[in-house]
Length: 592
Picture 1 (spheres, rainbow, N blue to C red):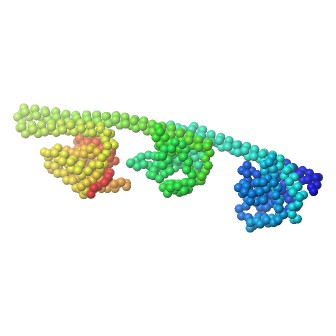
Picture 2 (picture 1 turned 120 degrees about the vertical axis):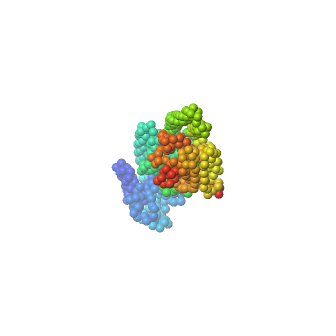
Picture 3 (picture 1 turned 90 degrees about the vertical axis):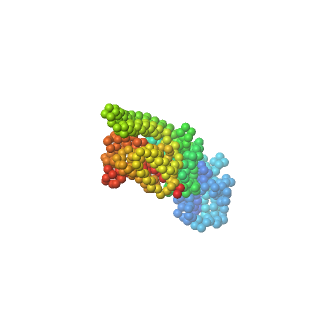
């Protein structure tokens, strides 16, 4: 039978422990008092947390060093006790005291239990804790049970108040931490937008860097789809967890961001467990960095998807609703900056086009005035000579030669007008490419040139290894070949004009080109003129008069094809023995 004075003293000691000891030690101190009072070997005193788990802080001192079970813990999950498979679990589930004076079979390394008494701590019909003691020398009697139940009844409201206070403190600390985090995030957001400049690209970089920090991501990227040389590429700008900038331009195939942009979703996209996806086979970055999670939004301009704004994690990191909202807002901000970037490019392009149009008009005016004045001067001189010869009785043959000069100058003027028309229309042909047989095109150009100068002795020899070479071009390619050959004839003082055309293939910086060489026996071009020959402000001299506009046309046409042109001496170091005009055209294919 419990002695009332002794019980009062025990409960008074427990009250002192709750009042004087911290949460870290009071469970052990109460348990120690009970162990001494009931003369048992060991036990535990624990509480039920908000998840329904049994937490036993007292075990870390009393039992921890004695128990040899591996991976032991002082938190017992709800799923471990709710099935009632153990006496302590059944006590919580059934909300009643249980005891046994018989020994228990325990796992290897576990403390041997000879007898046990387990009493739940109940407050308003809810189990809030539990006290268990074991190994009393003569087993547990009714007095022991009554005493422990009296203690748990006494502890119940005190423990409830203690737990409520503990939870209030944890909630307050959690709210304070969340508030600090929120303040820090607000500070990052404010600083990001305050640092915005007139450069949209730099603003996008600021957004990417900020989102990595705000979402505590391992990486953050802005991935933009671009097309270059008829290939789809992904242009990536990002930051890693050290805030080191990353800038890559790669083939777009196989990237998760490429697929997301092309699928054109309307909301935030989240992929977890990426190591189990096919992207680990197609995206080396994911595999190398062991990326587990992707979260991102598609960036759209006028409803058209152009990029994605995303964060990456090396584990399946949980993203809160607030963080999702921030990611969406930043994606929309990136869309605004991308739209500004696009408008600036269009404005710059428009300005450049206007400037180019003005420069072309000035150039055409200068060159046309220069050449047409020469033509009119030559015609006027020829007419004056004819008048003089008629008065002096010169022969008919001489007059016919002067008439030929006039006719040639008219042809030259007509060609000048044609060249200017071709130059002014080049923009119309920039995107109109078709498959053209290079050999056939050269043959037609050779026939046209010979027909145009039927009264001259001309030999044009085309060396060919293939019969059916295909290039991507348009009808302007004929003007290129004709211009080169016309210049070789016009600036040739030899009785017999010779042009040799060599055709071969060559690799330049990993790209294969058809190399077409036009070797002539004309008067040649000095070295100091060669470097300026294809420049728009090139001034003709006595040796190159009339070549400027034609070769400028050639250069501009070849630029459209991603081709090139240069000039060398036919015989190295002896420019007076003729020139070698070399044209490069990208290889498209051969039929033979």
